[in-house]
Amino acid sequence: MGVMCPCGVQVNATKQGENVKFNGVRGTITGNLTYLANVCVTTLAASTLSLVFVDTESPGTFSFMFTANDITSVTCKRDGQNCVVTVTGTGLIGSREFPFKAVFRDQVATAANDIVQSFVITGFFDQNGAVPVTQGSIVALGCQAL
Image (cartoon, rainbow, N blue to C red; front, top):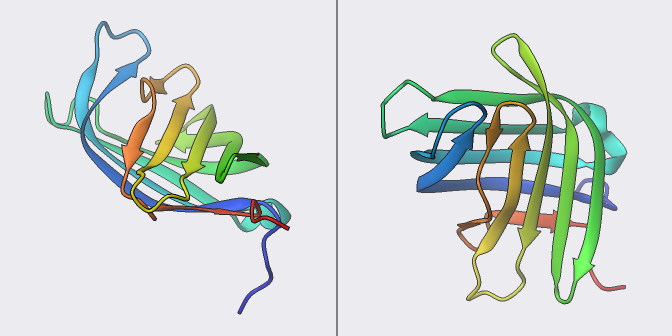
């Protein structure tokens, strides 16, 4: 067993047919999202986070892969029984670097979906509101009751 992470998140989530927004594009674009993250506040340099968007409306036109190259902060906040983890930093789409902010909500209730509260790549992409994902696909670390 590894060292306990005092604050972080593990994400392996997908969402099909989501409407998202791109900077400079009118309206929304429909596609599939894949979120992956393994982030811990004590090992930021070794932490990973990525987002893949596959455009299903006009295939290939808006598809991209975003990979964090510098995670600068992770915060964990209890919200009732649930935990909200906010991750910020910068990442790459191709060779272009963008700041990002991702907010993940781990819902304790087994009947409740976990939620990607928001994922914004500044100046490029906004997932356009909360995206519910499969229960258990977001695991917050460090919000356990003491």
